[in-house]
Image (cartoon, rainbow, N blue to C red; front, side):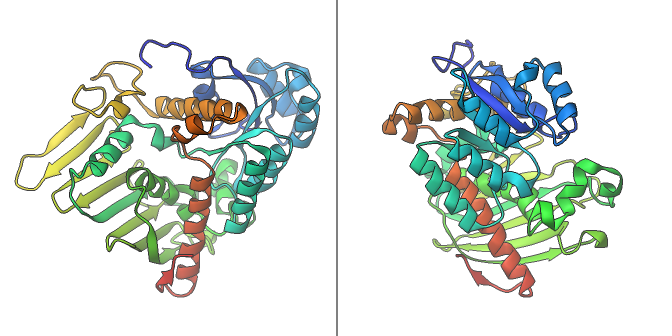
Length: 390
């Protein structure tokens, strides 16, 4: 990766739904997808306001006649072009994800979608079946999984360096919504509106991020049952929560904890994952993403650094510059978009072995995130009771 060689034989013609001038997340999608030349942005339905979307699209270099008023027209029109889009990224409010993803798959497009993929497990499984029938991939943007040290943690755990896994402690607990900021911020308003956000706020919006990191690090660990308590400290957000605690029991006897919070006053992100074994523990914090702390019982704490030769080869494969230089979230997303492109091309040529070897947050990750939120809400709404994980 460091030498910047092309990682795919040709750039994939790519479009966006959403991600316009007022989007909080659109720019990182474009930066990540375009950085390594694996995608080429040629079309978009960037905004619910057609003129505003066209103005924005032309400002970032998209031809005016390929800046569409809405996604259905884009999919139909691009399908008639010999140079039409082959993939689309969806960066719109949660309540639109299912319909747009379904329409894109029906148009035989590969999909990269913001999470949550949809509102219900049944919808997510419908998308899985549709993607399989069309031979298309679905990527879900759990962007933090692109940090190289997540791979290092996965390899250390698989090698038994921590011993038997006992506890997985997770949190994503920021403080930026400690007051009703949505009253003056349209980009935040939909996140606390059940019609657009779905059955949860922080559980789905941020809690699923460390949950997915745990799935990457500990792929064999399966939830057996969970208990969730959720609160709306800013009362106008009810019935959606701005704080939640989830306790999980795994089928191995290990336990896990997830603190999902938007009212942790003074905290920036506060996203951490700590995996505790019978021999040692590791911890990763997204505000210091280039390091993992490795703590062996009875020995001094070690800090493992990104880019160093003592790391596992898979943790070095995505390096973009030598050790000691900080890499950040844009690089992590770029790593994921490279994998999305490689998976799309492998799928298109029917190379099942190559596709199986590419690790990226895909349709199964999307389904699991939706399933986890559903179970958390079910537990919380029943009075924070234990529920079997279904």
